[in-house]
Length: 166
Length: 282
Image (cartoon, rainbow over all chains, first blue to last red; front, side, top):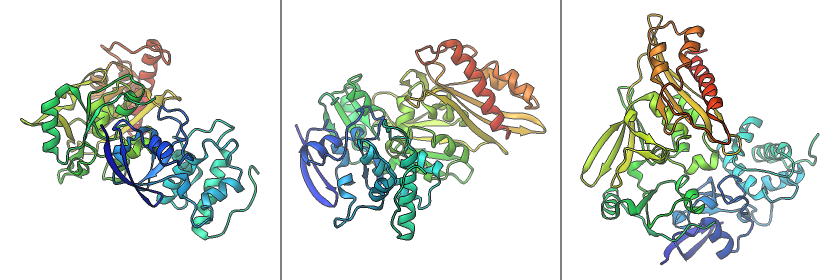
């Protein structure tokens, strides 16, 4: 038995028939081929599967595809506009906010939710906002720098300067 | 993992949802935000024949302050919506510490209360505020005092044909202030011990005190021994320390790999002191 789900993913309307038990992350990765959204822990802990749903960050491994019926979902593939990286993507690059990159799509989508609500977050607010996202390479220092830098870019329109830990 | 297969219903009204529950009873599980149910289904710790998805019933959402200082919170209000609503600052501070932003965006107040995880934070907060849980079924509406609601681990006074539609907190006494303090298990974020306290002084004495404790027993409970030891005292540091000795009175204290019963009991006393001191403005 399947349910019909109609949703918008990265601005494109999608019509799919899914089993009720299908998770949103499976729909995105396996049916829509949007494999930038990662599955890390599969227990709602790590945040690698974070996408935004109607503008708010959610763990797509803990949302049924049927629950996303009618929703507007954005994945990491949808944040660059007209071939230009989003300021968060540029800042993660410039500030070396990643090593292996596995957690990065989720980090960026969680940061997207934060910067949508708070234009000039403190480091404490940034760390609180990425509490549900785990990086296992090294730590969060440059991730915080990158999100702070992206917030500045979004506020002022000036682009990021290079350099990580300093 | 992937949950075992289930049938799915998305009723368009509360009446339709209640009719489905009457029909299917315990064979159906309610899905609100899904942040308790879906992890259990996915780990296959729990399974269900059918899911009734009430997540879109807008009538069950919202934070509604009453003119008399009371507060009604719709069952489907998410933690994030609670934070954006007209809620007491100390409750907001506590809710900011629940889960993470993704969890708070989806998890609901009614879902957490109805799920009654023995380490969940909201039950302790609800016990400190007092009030009642509003339950609806096809045969009508009833209310259960929050003091009589939490019966055991994942066990509450809700019947299988009922939906928790809201939680009503009464106006708090004149000058009452509250606080929630906890220590958590760092990997899961669940509370090892959490203590919520609401206190009000009257003529230099503790005139009102309610203390809710979570993480310690098989269900969240009111620490009545602490309340009666503090009542009528001057609320000073010595009175707080003496009252906190009663934090686990009469309880069978949980023991697991994260904290044995002796450690949990000791921490319950420490966290009770912190919650009381904070509620008293120190």
